[in-house]
Image 1 (tube, each protein chain N blue to C red):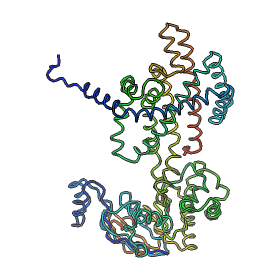
Image 2: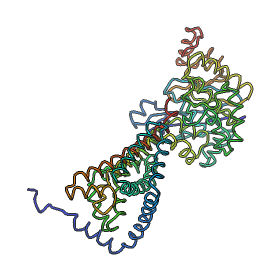
Image 3: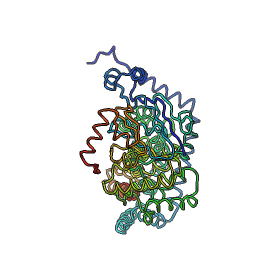
Image 4: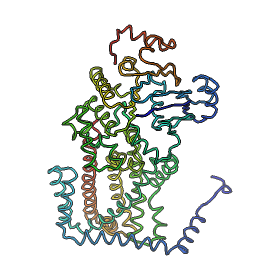
Length: 285
Length: 276
């Protein structure tokens, strides 16, 4: 046995800290919560409010825009049709809304941080271990304080999803920018490009395929969080899976599970398609 | 036309540049400084006057500091100590926006592995200098087309760099430098990546351009034949130190030391043939 005298516990101080934050700054979190909730409700209102065939058609158009392969469009059509046929359309739209808002926030946070990492050695040294922690820490550990601060429901679900899903986007944005050919950046500098012109005109466009790969990873990881998120009150496909498990209704769980997989495949193909078309004609050198 | 003056430039790479600089000033050699401080000496007390309107060649083997030296002229690299004057104005005294202005309007550059932007067409690459200067696409494109024609790439303006051969890519690099309309062009081993035949062609074209445009061209090469062919004056660098400066005739007839003499000998053995 490890000697008892050497035991230290961070349990009490952490609990006290969270407690006092909840008591003293609860209003701040309530305000943040309100903003995020409004955004989620807006996304849901659009996706669930529109007739199914409009969303269906929008997906097909996006697929076509991303890869220009008729076969892929047909494949996506069949998959989405299956979702509707299983009676999962509305649940899928709820899940999609949660995912989209998580992804949008992840992009808004992740890409600038990724750029910062690429530019600053110090920032990279501080952030990379933090990203490791974010990816390996069991999500329930930060779900508990998230619930205490933001209450049950969609908002903590979105926040937990972001924490879990944003690291690959940060990493790959950083990687993409650092991989840009040094001589091209040097040439842009030599012709008098400002840091801003070089970032937006050279580095980001050349890093786009890598950043798209990061976005793809982020979306996939966000999807893998939907079941966990349903445990704290997020609706959608995850809730259905959870329901299936709780009532030993294997069929119901599987149907919803298939819905999640289909959503993953569709979003994966679309983002990969955009990534590949960004790569075409550039790096064939 | 611009005159460039480089005064007592030292460039030390490493952590403890102060000790290394003091040692270099006292005349310690490169390996002794590396052993003592862990710093590598890139340039060791280089002073050079580059006259306007000519092709000035800086020659040396790899590691001699020639690429480092040329990057001091547009301050892509900051010297550890020393001064760089262009038309009497100290480049090192420029603020960040002034430096960008200086790069836009006074000095352009051609790179060994071209440095073309793979996501932009030939025309968009050529007018990059004009675009960062703030010209609209419509204003810049005619200028770009003119220089694309000059370097013989008409018809390729909407192609992308990956669709071109090495020689064509470097013509794009050259057109980009010319389109920037600066009076100084730095060429860092610009033709070294090209095969001998294309290389000869490009050298002819450069001589012709220099003749027509009267620009100050600083040309870096490791090849004595190339240096003799295009240079009005040649500076030879070894281990970051200037070994000799002179006209091609002076280099050939009175090499300053063994090092230069060996270069010249090698050349006469080959009968003046081009070698890659």
